[in-house]
Length: 302
Image 1 (cartoon, one colour):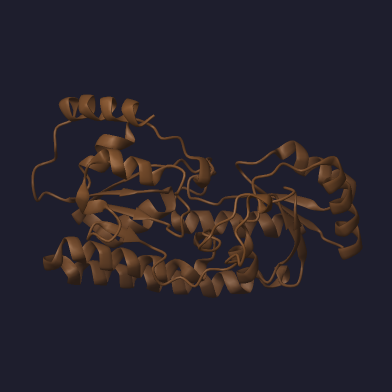
Image 2 (tube, rainbow, N blue to C red):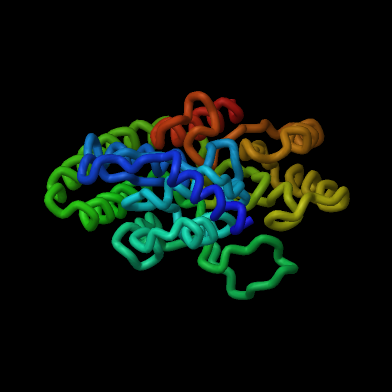
């Protein structure tokens, strides 16, 4: 794959001319929601592109050759961190040959730098499925983490462009003010969700569940990344009935058929949720992603 990417990189450099020096910061974000927040914080001073599509699994994003010239020409890369992008980003950064966006360099903007992760494993074993050694990386689904994301992006853009630090800070503060206003509204809107019991397809809804006060009692997957067995599904049906779980969180990248079968067996309603921006037509932005998830969960529980 790396040889193929290097060949495409050479072709890309020939075909794509660099932007005029100093025009804007060229930023590559790993997810659409991070790209949206970066645009909000950077304003007219940045040009932002996203690598992953909202319907993809962040742990299995294809290493598209078109990513390489984007990263080579980027001033910065904005990422979820906590190794969320481990399956595609490290190899692409190596091939892109852009030292300024490597880990530890000014252009490496890790939005998780002040996040306290949930579910940090104490034992790492292949028998436990797709583990995340640094903890669950899906904190972007919790709107309480939005301010920390914006702070990290503002710090990163300021490192790259110190003369405009004040602009980035002002844009960040406007974003955080809008977020605070929306969170007051969301808190009232989602009060009926608190205390409900649910299952998710993959163990990636912990942050959203904690924010909403949802009690997650299981996953459709046997373990992270391991498809369910008939026996596991039978046990899950029994547990959902015993626990009176009324909600199934089905991340858009996972099987609707299995979720619907489980709904038929238990009477629980399915809510199709996003783990990234752009997963649904109404979730193209960071706020759109959050609002889609809250709305679809509320509708499922009615």
